[in-house]
Figure 1: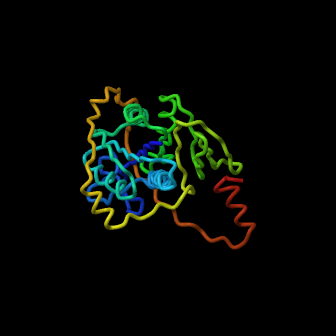
Figure 2: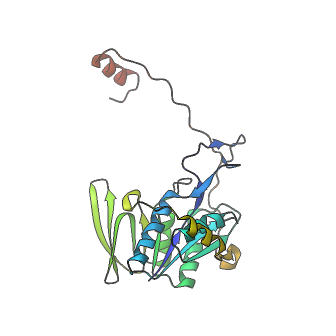
Figure 3: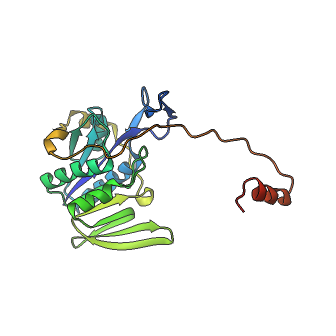
Length: 249
């Protein structure tokens, strides 16, 4: 089995971000970047499948500028066998990303695609579903448990009412949730080895896909500051404020 894991380079989730003064986006100058947390979980699951003998190759792929090589090398240090960078200097929408991934899936003859359910910057939660539709593959989203058996994948996923278990035939697209596993930390020797491994770079134009945007971001603004709360003397006063000021009951 050959598994493709899509990973994304995002702003480190533990740093404080600021919006640019012209409101065109987030100011990423001098900010620490990292692998999207949901992508880390997807990669960890793929590596575990390889370690258990179910998969024999794990490929990590990222779409973006040359700076994404750093994230891909982290993926190699975490256990991936091969890394591919689709070089593109413009921000792509989920549909364009899915189209690019489809071409790689077909070229590399992939048996399973694992990816995070969403990225923490766009929060779109669309790419996995769109990729499955373009490939005409089964999909299972928000996976909290993955079991491979007899060329099928049994996925437990979290829903509003509890847990849902479903079975899909392979090949399939699986998107991962936070509770699927606990990602490992790369060991220093593996980090040093990853620095010397080659990364296959593919120009996005060579894929012959339409990546033209279908939407336009008008402006990006920071959320309003939280207002100071008030202390109430008793339950009656609290209920009165909820009824007449907050108007939530």
